[in-house]
Image (cartoon, rainbow, N blue to C red; front, top):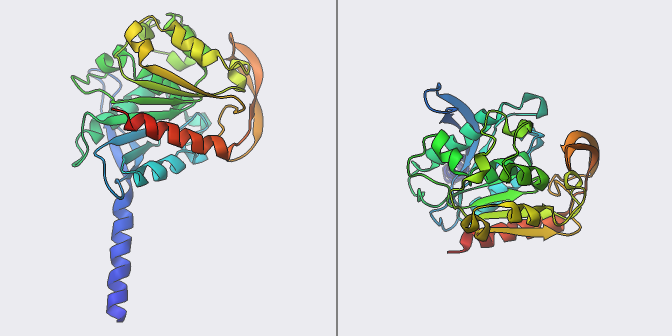
Length: 287
C-alpha cells in the first residue's frame, strides 16, 4: 500500500512538472544579429487540447508582478498550450523594443515546433506594454524584420493598451515615442491582416479616461481590411490594469494623451478580469 501511494505521488509530481515548466526560448533582434535566450513559463494544454497555443506578454511592471499567471493557468485549462515570457523581471530592467519584439517572435517560432500545436493557430495576448507588442505584431514590419517567412500569429489580443499612442503610430507619427525606438516611423501603416481584439478601460488614465480612445484608433487604421478585422471591447468603469489584484496610483511623465503628464489610477476589478477572460476565449474560438 505504501509503495502504491508513493507511485501515485510520483505520477502527480511528474504530471505537474510537465504541465508547467521553465524553459529558455531562442530569439534575435533582426537579420544577422546574435541568438540570445529569454526565460518563459511553458504550460501544456490540459483537459482536451485544442491544438492552439497562446503567448502571454506581461506589462511594464515586469514579470515579477505575477499578473500573467492567472491567464496562463486559465487558458491552459481551456485546452491551450501557453507560454508566459519573462521579458524582464521588473520595471528598471526593461530592454529595448527590438529585443522585446524579438523575444515575441522567438516565442512564435518556438511554439510552432511543439508537438500537438498547430503552427497556424498560435495567438498572442499582451497587457499594457505587452498590448503594444500585440498591436505591433499585426504589422507587416514585424514579420519582415524578424524573418518569419510564412509564419504568422493566428490572432492577437491587446489588453488595456494606451490608444492615443497606437493612434499616433497608425498615422505614421511614431518618432520620439520610446515604445517604438529603433522601429520605422511608419511601421504601423502596413498591416499583416491578422484579427486583433482590443480590451480597453473606459477610465484609463493614460487616455484621459476617454472611452472612445481605442475605437478612434481603429478609425485611424488606414488599411481597410485590417480595420474590419480589428474589434474593441470597452469596459466603461474599468481603469488601466484592472487585473493587477490591488488598487494604487503613480505619476506618469509624458505618457498620457498628447505626451502630457498625469496620474495613473488603477482599480482592481475581478468582474472585468472574468469578462476579459471570456471575451478572449470567445475571440479565439471564432472561425
